[in-house]
Length: 235
Image (cartoon, rainbow, N blue to C red):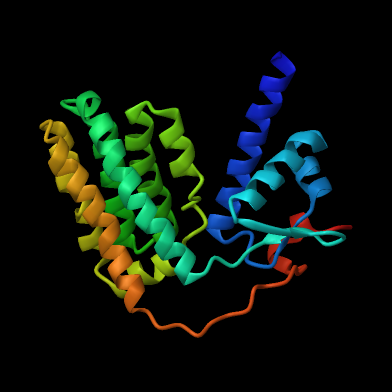
């Protein structure tokens, strides 16, 4: 049993490592995920790596094909909008469940909010996204509902950055960052429904923007061996 639990923990850590690399742009759409390279880089066996890759394929983050292995998928605009619609509902549910625990206990949310503001002022949108993800994850984790956390995590917003970055770059990033302040205040004061509505509205504002985007349909990228992911290439 201990070996199984350890393997599952490793799988989760490897999955999160790959998500971080995709979200930061270190692994771009079309880049291969070479199992042997990941094993060597992280110093782990092939079993948890294979399980992590399989989970990311199921989540729609990676694509895979026989004799081609796995590679990073391009996340489409439609997929991002659909995921945000689901996130809006899950965030509102998380707010209702987490509110009693966060009342008068928002130090971590405030810290993350300050980090979001700093990143927005620097126009460091990678850090902004990381802090924003941590802000919302903290609320979901505080809700204490494992099924909710699994559903929320499966949306993989770590990698849905392309259109969100465009939203930040073309909009008032600092103003968008300030949308987090009334959310923190609502939790601090125990205003459950206010917090739930603010969180839902926060996601819906982005959905409204993305719906206005008109982009040329793109083909699904095929696996490549770009220099950007040398550490994941076959020797």
